[in-house]
Amino acid sequence: MNTLSASLPGGTWPLGDLTVTRFGYGAMQLAGPGVMGPPADRDGALTILREAADLGVTHIDTSGAYGPRVTNQLIREALHPYPESLHIVTKVGAVRDEQGGWPPARQPEDLRRAVHENLEDLGVEVLDVVNLRLGDAQGPRSGSLAEPFEALVELQQQGLIRHLGVSNATAEQVAEAQAIAPIVCVQNMYNLAYRQDDELIDDLSAKGVAYVPYFPLGGFTPLQSTALSAVATRLEATPMSVALAWLLRRSPNILLIPGTSSVVHLRENAAGTGVSLSDEDLAELDKIGR
Ligand SMILES: NC(=O)c1ccc[n+]([C@@H]2O[C@H](COP(=O)([O-])OP(=O)(O)OC[C@H]3O[C@@H](n4cnc5c(N)ncnc54)[C@H](OP(=O)(O)O)[C@@H]3O)[C@@H](O)[C@H]2O)c1
Image 1 (cartoon, rainbow, N blue to C red):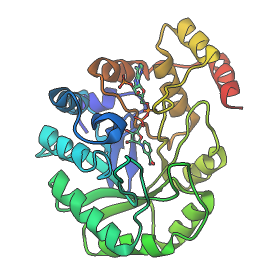
Image 2: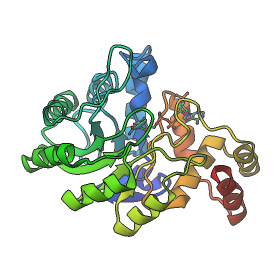
Image 3: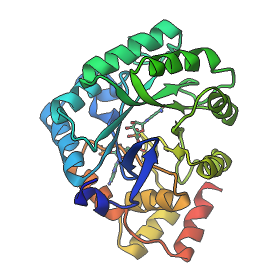
């Protein structure tokens, strides 16, 4: 871990034998509109990825479904050969259709194809972490994950994947996965205003498993709240920094993967997330999602 990583807010967290900064970067929005096709500003996308690495970020979240394949190819172009400390977490289990939808693709052969595409596009021989994405665009759906998860365990045993995780999962599916093989992270939707997983977060924290909220800033419609703005004004911070600082304080196993296509926002978030929240600030922020 370099000295810059040590200065990022939140310190680090172990994903199995890999150490990552709790302040990471979510690469989804680097692809074109609707997460389809190439970005309008290709050089800008490459600059953001390099800037994230220069800031000391060692956790980049991606998926072969972004673009599709576009985001992974941008990551490779910007950062390959990767610094040893940098870890890329990807997802399999959904593809893209012509309308830009995200239909599930969780048959064993779909997952094998997706893992091989990720390896090729990222230019690596082993994927650091692969999340099995469950549910659909509306959120988690109940049902057994055994067949697709076991297919990924097989690919892990073949040496193509270092660690496994699940995404868009119910608490029951998380438990089912853990009964099959160790997982290092769960990536579900969660933020200041959307707190369905409070119990799951605490349970995973007790087990030393990372919880990685997707849409930490509210996603395509970033968070807007008078209470959040009031706390941010008082702290002379941006509302987005305060929302991220709240997540870091919420639980030690929470890892941040905020997305941005702006270098200014990336720098602002990396610096601002270190803002310290008083008990009074926390109490006010806590009320937003309740
Ligand atoms: N597992 C899953 O199913 C799943 C689903 C969705 C996402 N994800 C992952 O989660 C990551 C994060 O999600 P996300 O990027 O969609 O949403 P997000 O991080 O909640 O929010 C991103 C939005 O916030 C804006 N933003 C960021 N910093 C800002 C700042 N300082 N001031 C104002 N606006 C700011 C961005 O706009 P600008 O570009 O203008 O900064 C962008 O519109 C993704 O990159 C992806 O890796 C996973």
